[in-house]
Length: 182
Image 1 (cartoon, rainbow, N blue to C red):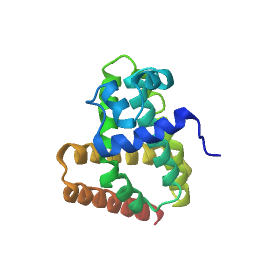
Image 2 (image 1 turned 120 degrees about the vertical axis):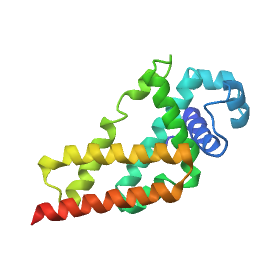
Image 3 (image 1 turned 180 degrees about the horizontal axis):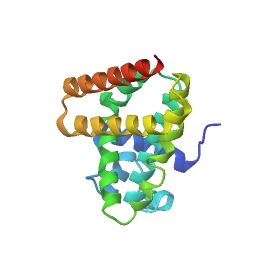
Image 4 (image 1 turned 30 degrees about the vertical axis):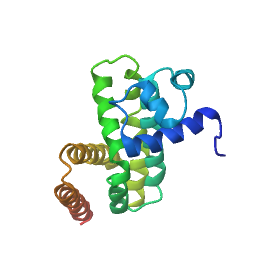
């Protein structure tokens, strides 16, 4: 069932707006103007600018996890690094840093930021035949490498180098897994 509440509609609009225009460096009033609403409506639904940005990042992450189940790992990497998600990926890392630094309104962002991904990644690994005992470590390694390369991409913009590094990681993973079967 699709949520059509005013909060959900604002969240969808904010995701789209931030993907095209950024958001972390804007004031709540500027974000509200870009969304065609008032800053008071954003405060009502999200509590603060940080609450809005955290909700955006969490929803984007939830959508990415849902896409993981439907895509080949190589296709998933290309989806994560698509130009239309770059601003959302940048927002993720900005919020991550703010939350780690204890910025008020952002610390809740860390809840589940790792754990929410491990189960879906482990399911994907199970489908690829990775032994159950190996899945937690492989899931964490895959998440760490993926996030590290995403940070590299939003920092440098060097898609070619980042894609080459991910291809190398995937080849190493595939080779290590294939060798462990023999």
